[in-house]
Image 1: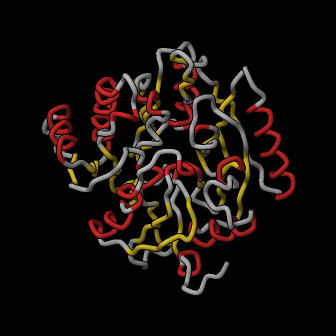
Image 2: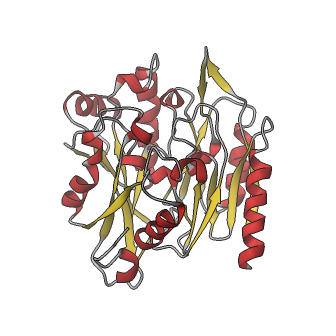
Length: 339
C-alpha cells in the first residue's frame, strides 16, 4: 500500500465529534421499496417525523428525485429548513454511502470531505453505483475539497470522539468482503491518515438482524470524549466482552474511558426476520438527541440514560419500529455536516 499525496491528517484536518455544532444534516428520502418489505409507507411516515424533528434544531439537506421528491414535499409540507437536492441514489443509508465531513484544526483550511469506496455492505445489495457517487456530488454542491479514500469504508462502521480516538469493530472492517487486499495494519494506517485519528479501539459483537457485519453505531457510541455507552443485551455477553476490551485498552494506554450500559430493547422479529432495534442508533443534532424508540419497556430507561449523558440537550424519542424493517434507524440514515 502506497500513499503519495498529503493526507488530511498531514494537512491539519480533523474529524469533529458528532456533538460539535452542525451546519446541517444530510438525508436521503426513502424511495427503494425493497428496503422496507411490507412497511414502506409506514417507514416513510416515521422517516418524515424524523426529518421534522431534525429540522427543529438545524437545516436539512435532503436528496430526492422524481417520485421521491414529490412524496417528500407531500409528507413534509413547506418546511423552511429543508432543502431538496436532485441527486439520485440507490437507497437511503447516507451514513454509509455519503461523505464524511472534516473540519480544520486551526480553522484555516478549506472545508473538506472524504469520499470512501462503497459496495453496499460487502456486495449484499446491488446495484450501488448511484450511492457510490454521492460524496463527489455533495462535494460539488458544497464546494468542499474532496479526499478519495482508497478503501471501502461505511460511515456507520466508525465512531470518533473528536480528540483522536476511533471506535470500530473487527467483524466489519476486517471482513474480506470490504477490502480483501488490506490487512489490519493497512486499515489502521488509512483510518489514521484520512480520519485524522491517533488511536483505534477495536470492539466486537452482533446485533440480531443487523446486515452490516456489526457496525459500531448499533453497538457502542461516544457521549463525550471519555465516555462510551455500549449496548447491554441480557441475551448475550456483548456488553461484558466490549467493556473488557475497553478496560484492557485503558490500562494499556493509560487513558481512562468510562463505559455505561445502554440496555437493549426486547428482541424484535417478524416471522423469521430479526429486526435490529438498538438505542445506540441515536442521532445528535444542535441541542437535541433523537432517540429511536420501539414501544418497548426499555424505551424510557434508554432516554433517561442519554438525558444524563447530555444534560444540556433536549431528549426527543421518535418512533422507529417500522423504520427498522430496513435494518437500520436514525444514525444509519443521517450524516452531520459540521460548521
